[in-house]
Image (cartoon, rainbow, N blue to C red; front, side, top):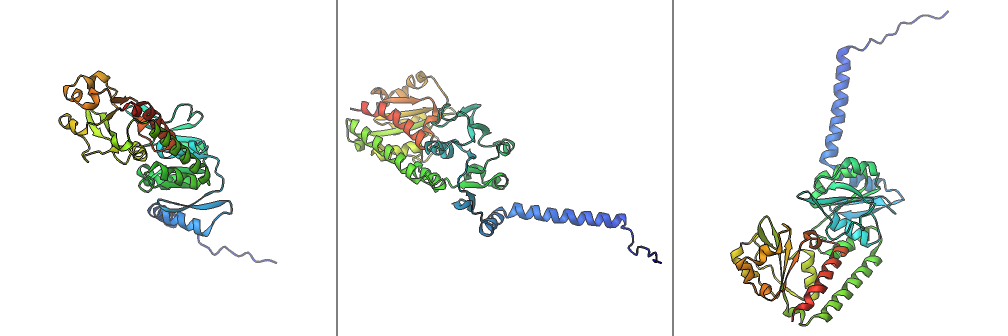
Length: 329
């Protein structure tokens, strides 16, 4: 006959349940805090310890990341540095963020045809993470100046390459870096050869030696003039042609009274405020400039078309220069 043995374990009290719940929450919180404070360490550890045979390591702003060998669903979180070179290389992203200026979307040298079929993920300063998640990307490209703070959230969605804008500030360097990620170096070389051929063609159309032509670029917005930075892509194009281009001052804004210091053979006004051209031409100080007197002031009313960092946008700048530079006698 079997003996009936009573269960010697005491029932768990409510206090003990509360203690167990607290312990679980503390462990969970510690894990989340560790992930938040050390996302790179976690990512680098996963790269070095668990490298899938179907992925490869890419160097980026925050170290290393393992990306798919042949990514098909790419999100580009910047139109100039990322979407433009991708499209030039024959790679169409499934989604991209857009720069919105005073309620107006700026394509930065791209056309509506270029981005047809690409999901708009919202303003690049605050893209929709929900939309990105719904797209199920297998690779995200992002710029450090907007997305370093949310890199962890992006990397949870898909492997994310954070591009260093200071290391890739030249449109050529940036193109070559993007091409390297996708094993498209040969295509990038071909794009740059075509660009250089256009530069030589333009030089041959000039009536003066390039170094004898002085160019000034002034942005006009918020009712003020801002000298075009020497780090912008148009300055790189000017340098490749051999033109004289000097911003003169590092001041962010200049007054109308010193505008004569920026006189040149050709003056480009990047008209972000979309002022009527008469607004400038009827101003006595502006009208006194030699470039204006010689009818060599040109207005770029689509400001984004010269605010570019990719080969498509740069070729748009060259299109403008083919129209205007040969007019200088």
